[in-house]
Length: 341
Ligand SMILES: NC(=O)c1ccc[n+]([C@@H]2O[C@H](COP(=O)([O-])OP(=O)(O)OC[C@H]3O[C@@H](n4cnc5c(N)ncnc54)[C@H](O)[C@@H]3O)[C@@H](O)[C@H]2O)c1
Image 1 (cartoon, protein in one colour):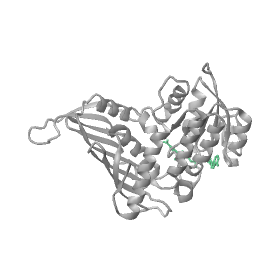
Image 2 (cartoon, protein in one colour):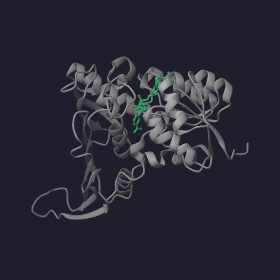
Image 3 (cartoon, protein in one colour):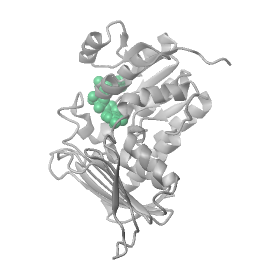
């Protein structure tokens, strides 16, 4: 069948990530026609009228899907509604870009995977960090073996928390709407980067806790990862600090990368032994490791929809990352290492 040139787009959930990334991205795309959005909050409809005047607004996404004959849908709701909104959009024969985490449970995720298979439509998860210049360069340096065999990865992401200041309400802090705190919200990006860069994870040990905020879910978390390759990794995430170090570090037998989101990406040549014979020659590869991301996510997604780009942030990638995050919560609750796979 011939490719369409312009795709009719709808957005489910018109809050902060929809307004900061999805809607402006579709508005810029020559292949997208922003047709409608769905959000139950009247306040969102007022904001949307100011930002995107002529767009039709629905209180319920099912009405939007029934009436608008959409081709492409973004799911930008709180995590609790990802599964029902994504499967409904797939059943309505739309290509779906779903925000992270893909869903709250593996069972929900498997329903999405089955719906995507049945509809034969594309389904992508919004793993934004893969589209930053820094992580993309890290992937290249691992693929071309510049670092030799990688044996260790460290990822740290932190900010002051999604509410107030970012999200439209405090749903991120409610277990029944979010399914987890910082370990899931920021951790899922970090876990996905680890899987993408280092391959399958076979075990996780973790501790998550609400250390500062009086909330139902964790505001800080640590995870120790064991990779199938034998490499180790650790992830630190927090909702209670200014960034501090934010980014990732990768250590390999022939070199190291420090991808500091605030300062730039540096490559160190040398030997892993760190003995007297080690050589440390630092090169700055880019000063802007966070260029890309939200500003190009929708362009990338529309390239996936139109077949120009391969779908990489698949539902399986969403499931793999969620499996590790859920295992990390189990480890935190039991105090034991949890095996994966
Ligand atoms: N990729 C990223 O970097 C990134 C960044 C931030 C948020 N997110 C993800 O995006 C999603 C939304 O987060 P946010 O920060 O925009 O939250 P938000 O609170 O700002 O917006 C959520 C919106 O969804 C609406 N909503 C609630 N229930 C709905 C339903 N049943 N149908 C339609 N709309 C509904 C709310 O009224 C609100 O307007 C979350 O899954 C979050 O994890 C991803």
